[in-house]
Image 1 (tube, rainbow, N blue to C red):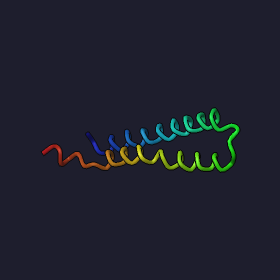
Image 2: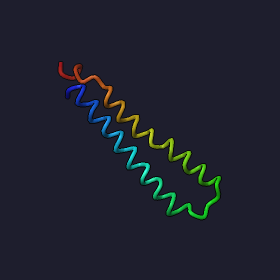
Image 3: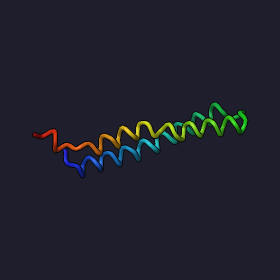
Image 4: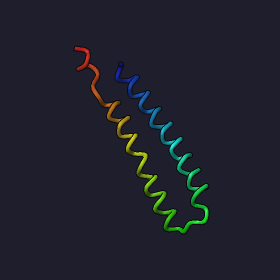
Length: 72
């Protein structure tokens, strides 16, 4: 696969991931944490704010993998 195409696909994937993840995390927080304290909200959003990085790391790793070595 062309490196530029791989970067485009990866960038769009990360953008879609971030949007969907934010919507899902906010929906869960609204549905489940309505009556919770400020500390619970802080912990929830801190954890969910960091958790999306895990799938993004795999996408970035895939994007940066050199495909020219696999063609030989």
